[in-house]
Length: 101
Image: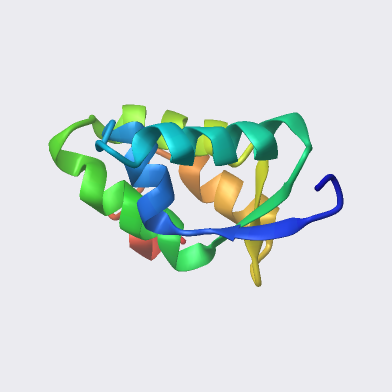
């Protein structure tokens, strides 16, 4: 399984962050495999902005930025410059995160 590459869906991340039963345990295992290097995980660029938007009811903008930065420590952005997304998440001077991306 070490050389396997996976695309992580938006809902898988939301399962974990929102503790959505019954999926959160399985979803957390997949993210743990990615974090440990057992899987090489990717996330679509649009998933980053969708997660940021969906979680607005549950987390502050700063908390959402930190959550996503943590996730991007072990997931790469598919078809985008990973560093550009990290820079966008690190900026809190932009009122609209999607515009910043």
